[in-house]
Image (cartoon, rainbow, N blue to C red; front, side):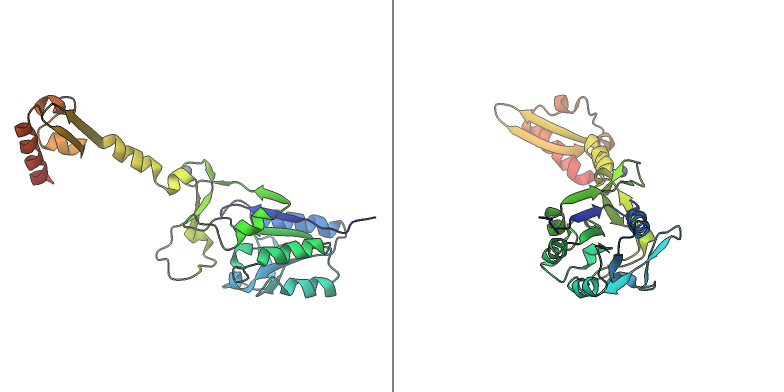
Length: 249
Ligand SMILES: [Zn+2]
C-alpha cells in the first residue's frame, strides 16, 4: 500500500541566516520539478511591504499568500490541489495555540510542509509556538548567521533599534542584529568586570572577613592588590579599611 504521508520540515535561524533565500531556492526547485507549491505568510509580517511576495534583501522574490491563521491554509491547498506548502515567518502565527497540530495535520494529509521562522525572539525566548513546531518536525535545519560583533555563529536576533514598544515588532530588519550567545549576554564585558574584582578573604581566630572590591578602587584608596591581605591583619585595620571604602564609594 502506498502511503500518502507528507513531512514537516523546519528551517530556523537568526536574522541574516538566509532563511528567505533558502525558502526561495526550495520554491524555485519545486516549481521547476513541476510540484504544485505555494508560500504562505502571516498578514502581520507584511507591514510596509506588499502581501503578495516574500523577498530577500538582494531583491529576489517569490509569490506568497498572506493569511491570518494557519487553518486557512487547508482549504486553499485543497482548492489549489497543492503538493507542498511553505510557511514563512511562522513565529508570528502565535494566536493558534495548536498551530503545530494544524501543520502536522497538513503533513498527514499528504503535503510536504516547509516551515521557516525565528526560533528565539530578541529576548532569547522561544518565539511564539516555534518550540512546539520544532518538537513535532520530521526534520529541523538550523541555518547559520554570523555574529556582528565577533564573527562566531549567531543564535539571537538582538534588537538594537531605538525603542522597543509594546507588542510584536515587525519589519525593521535593520533594527535587529544577529549575535552569538556570548555577545548577547555581554560575556566579554562581564569577564573584564570580574577580572577587575578583587576577592579578599581573611580568616583568623578572632574574626572572619570576606569582601569583593574593584581593583581600581583599592588603588584609589592607596592599597595594592598584592598586599591588601597583609595590610588587614587585625579587626581594627579591617574596620578602618571599611570606613575608607565607604568614603571612596
Ligand atoms: Zn559574538
